[in-house]
Image (cartoon, rainbow, N blue to C red; front, side, top):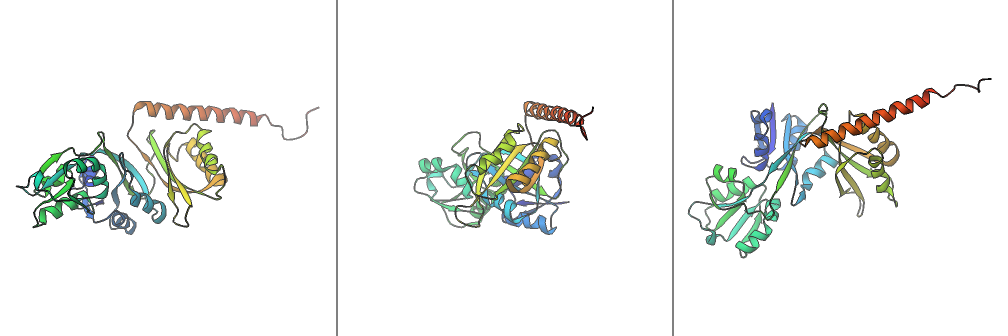
Length: 311
């Protein structure tokens, strides 16, 4: 089995792959961009692919989100949360005071904005395709004064010297990666479902009507984000993550009502997530309550007479 990932070698995406025991041993193929990874899986060049989806500081990786929402039929198979620690690295012999330019993936440089302003206020910051690409480019450059923001793994891989560690502005920095492929994984009892809702009509209360489908079933939302539909200015859709699996009665009923009454829905996947036992217990409690309510309704329906009142 071949796994495509956002490369080149040394990216956080590759680290996310290596963190999964069942994926680490697969044949890994790096691709230059996130859309290239998704295209490789769509075309059959690779069976599955790993791409970044969201960062705890900078938010969604919009190219991933939009490609999945508007251009792809792939489904999310799982998510992987990876702690992110960034370093400033340069060719051996370079000192921090020598740095005049910094190459970085835009999400990475944004996570270090304050550090760069304090430590390297006069350095030019340029964009790279990825953190590992920044490190690789600096290692191959013959110009002096160049540095890269990357992960320690990429710095070591490309023979760079670490000038400063933990340069991100906020502690607890994490990035969420998703494994994409075809089909829906079996429910685990602690799952997440991702959808995109397209309003059929832009009118007051339309978002409230969508959200009420979840609230009435005590389904917990873990993400709600608006994205332009790319159709016209001011036209938005809603990306929603919520607890549950499409195989769950509660979840399937919610999706059924959403599609029938409120919005056009694109399904992005139901997949396992990491979490605490408390979250699992909450899902079990909601499922039990839903089944009890269903049994009560069936009991009432069983009492309905088919004809006239008995004499």
